[in-house]
Amino acid sequence: MRILLTNDDGIHAPGLAILEDIARSISQDVWIVAPETEQSGMSHSLTLHDPLRLRQIEEKRFACKGTPTDCVIMGVGHVLPQKPDLILSGVNRGQNLAEDVTYSGTVAGAMEGVLLGIKSFALSQSYGWSSKSQVDWSCTRAHGADVVKKLLDHDLPDQTLLNINFPDCAPDELEGIAITSQGRRDQAQLSVNERHDGRGHPYYWLGFEGRRVDPKTGSDLHAIYNRQVSVTPLKIDLTDRACLEQLRASFSS
Image 1 (tube, rainbow, N blue to C red):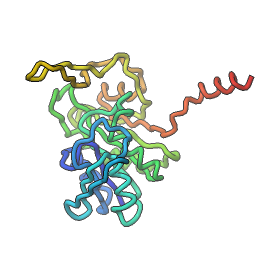
Image 2 (image 1 turned 60 degrees about the vertical axis):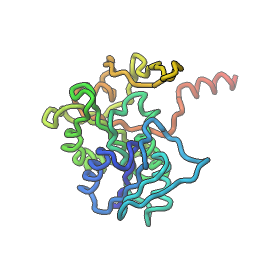
Image 3 (image 1 turned 180 degrees about the vertical axis):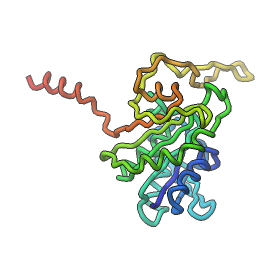
Image 4 (image 1 turned 90 degrees about the vertical axis):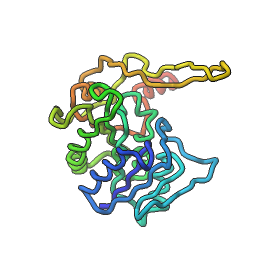
């Protein structure tokens, strides 16, 4: 099995090293094409107005001066000798749950993979509840390979990726795996922080607020809060089918 790895935290991110260990427990034919610098929050963007720079670091390991989407396109279309059998994106520093998936470069790496017809998983390690500002990677490190291997046994529908999140807990505190739906937070998580430079001019930082919500049972948020690995199948097709039929009915009359 040929596996392509990417992420949005950059070529030197600790989560990528953990992902490589997971991949090598499955196959020795592992390739890495990851961003030269951090690309968090870039979603499914790609580079169209600037040249892409590709730097080979060592055998089968490349850094691309672009987004996670660019990395997958370069990996599949230029770097690898043949199309990979699996794309793994991550392991992200921080959870990608609920609305996060629309911002996430990690999820976008897997999204590009399924658009290219390749089975693709996005992996993220939650933090902030028990580990505070420091990421405890031990849950993903201990359980990541087993989770991925179990999921490889399942055939997925066309253009469906798996979004996998590991809870912020010690490996022996894990309460199993939950197959979940994409959740929805009941309050805004992004805040605008105004600051002032040395001349008194304002500038702004966008940031995520670490607030717990009251998620629905069966959602990705609920699983992570209950120390479960969350596995959410996500489709590329964003069509609201119920609304589609309502509009059709309205405009056909």
